[in-house]
Image (cartoon, rainbow, N blue to C red; front, side, top):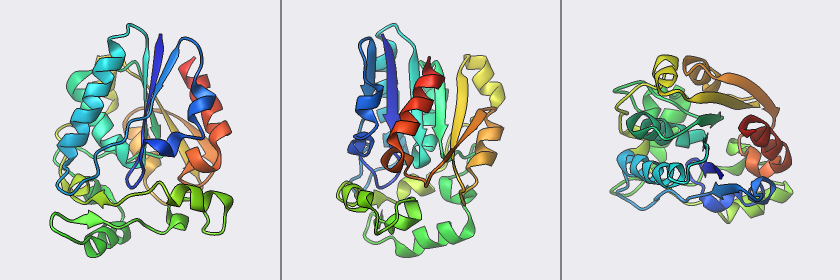
Length: 228
């Protein structure tokens, strides 16, 4: 039995994949859509552990495992993969990566890093939900209310904690991991550079960043093609 693990990005929850999920489900195929912890005090290591545990569960089934990491999830997913393996195919969906010793905010554009640091509130600090248009969903669109009801604040520490290991093509070759990147275009973040560093085959989808909400059918078709 094959397994898809769909890991959402910051501010999202597992329900973000609700429009894509039924398009991927089929006899002989399991699709997991976990919600990453989002309570104050959550660290990057907590999310790495969550992904590790999911991969271990999925790989125990004996079938191929496809790990799909959207946006922020590229950071914990890459660390989980490098630490424990168990993944046959990695799909970076408009995803962040960071080199060893660096955090997501270290590699982010200055304007985004500044917004995160100045807008976070509380102790431990939490990031407020950003405007929907900034994550690829127009405020006046039919999807805006649907997605808005599913978003939550996100712990800043997961953006500032450094990663342990660099996800590069050499490491992935050694692990025997097939890798792909799906990029939402046009985009403003350096996701293409990260995908190239990881040695991914790159494909593009004409969509805003929240493609699982705005173009779920197209996304599902691309994922199934990669996972076949």
